[in-house]
Length: 442
Ligand SMILES: [Fe+2]
Image (cartoon, rainbow, N blue to C red; front, side):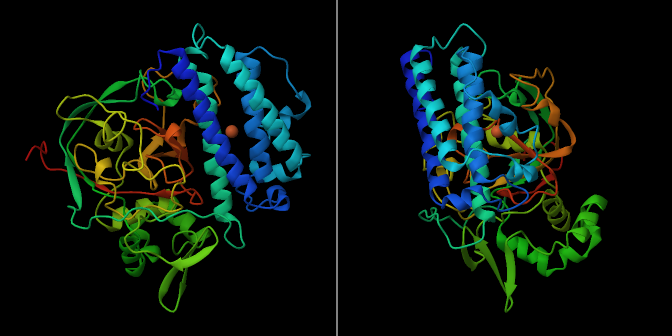
């Protein structure tokens, strides 16, 4: 769908409607899977009550599409401050006079009906928010990003399982452990991806020395070796801030792991199960990922290294939309969209490999990089400063590639996510890198 002829307004309208519908179906699944009492409960101080996400989705859709694009008056101006993410941090949200579940649903439903009318009448050109349907695409991505957030809330919630999905595909186990990315320039970021967000722009050349990158994300088995070797007890492997946090938070294993009779178990969406050895490690903080890499005699890749490994085509010299090419992600390429409620084993998805042979760069687990979240040269805040610009700086580390919880519409080789280095309730893992000798052309 994403490769449809977007210059044809009818095709573009249908694509937008399809993406909006897909997002709403997922929102319906995530908010319909629990009783209303659980929608208004706060399952973790890190997260909003699900009912906040639901009305916030509708409120942002109303704000950007009905008001900013459509020029309509606010439907319920009195509720706007409740759903402004900058006005109320997550911990505060349960104490707000939020719309109850039935009213939140009705509001989001009413907004959506008006949006579909607006879409049918929109020229989808002639204004920056309208060109290529940008604001509609932004809102589809926004809803899917909150669906991922709501899936994190489901993971944090205690109680029996309410979500279900088939297992992901199996993996080959004969892969080389790492791939070589030779030295040279590549194009990072984009000028052409129609729904790319401001922080992915503009395209710019970055010249990198040669490096080796793990073929697949670091597995639970490898991570268990770090634990067994005393990795959590040895400050040599940790940055000073990382060690301080490890001590203060008493970290001893990834989030949701427990040890029973010498075996590691994990809680996953209400199921307690043995930790699968060949699956990418999940729910680790940047500090843990960084410590593991140092213990392994390696390092986290920079954001630029990650993107070069994921997008650069050494034959044509151009950067692809995805590791496998420009085609939108299909089930054969990557584990995306909550199709499976877990990462696929390391080495899965041969059809999703990058030209250098790296696997699973898209989907499965968000990958921590060594890089702080900063602006690309020539960055311009769009359509509002609070989208990215206010987050630039050394406080946040960049994650790349998306997880099994990320929808295709909110995922591409240029997409950048960011979070605090202590965070691990997110679907975060990592892979490691090392410098290559010389130019790396051998
Ligand atoms: Fe939001």
